[in-house]
Image (cartoon, rainbow, N blue to C red; front, top):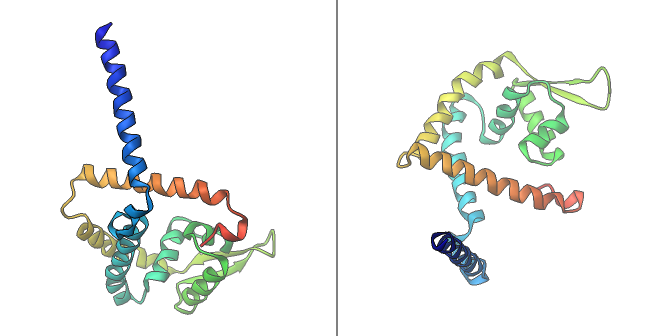
Length: 183
């Protein structure tokens, strides 16, 4: 019985400690240092990833911006323009510009839906399909650079934490009016 009370007490003390840490962590002064901001750190990491990846993909005629769209199309060839926009996480006007660029580069074609003429499906060309196998190693190389001092467990934990962060922010974004929810 004493052991059970001790466990409960320890649990309560641990929770209070975590709540205190979270309370202090969430004060505005904490975020005056950009290194305490997850948003800042992920933005810096993203820019570094993009820069290093683009150095490799440009050798094959693909910009970092085009890469984002190709990566989704390799998984979902033939999806609509709107679906592609949602999967990449960008607004439709930005997607239209990217698709035009990919089309001009000979990497995609646009086809109107036979069922609903308002929908436009995006299809990869043979060249774009070939590039998937060429650019894959470029991505792996940049991933290896970014995680070289991390264990497999560290990488899995980082991925899980980032996915949780994304889910948390997506949940909050759903509460926003439609025009404000997409960046």
